[in-house]
Image 1: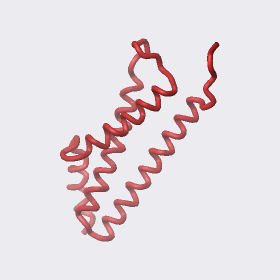
Image 2: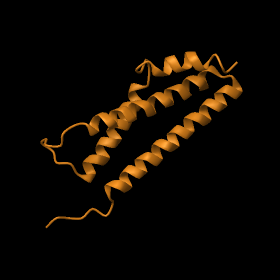
Image 3: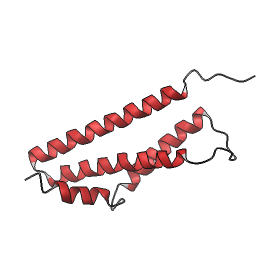
Image 4: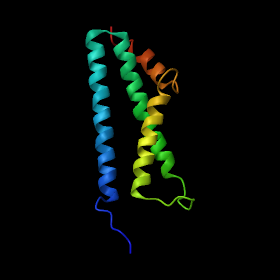
Length: 114
């Protein structure tokens, strides 16, 4: 007998979108605060936040291109695990050098904070 999952895929996708939207809003707020206070550290933190969101979205979209005929069947639990894994990998990748997006953004945005 097949179990029916009470939470649909559309609900999960909407929740993921809302979570990303919240992070995007927090980047904008962080940038505005850094611009107002002219604080270099806050500006770099805001750029790293943006890089984290960007890498997370990139990983999520790359994962969507994978064919699902693998060893482990696609399930709600697996979707949650993969989403959390992508988020954590994105956070860790933006620390230190990251992929370079935060550094380039910082260089460009620091011109406008003065």
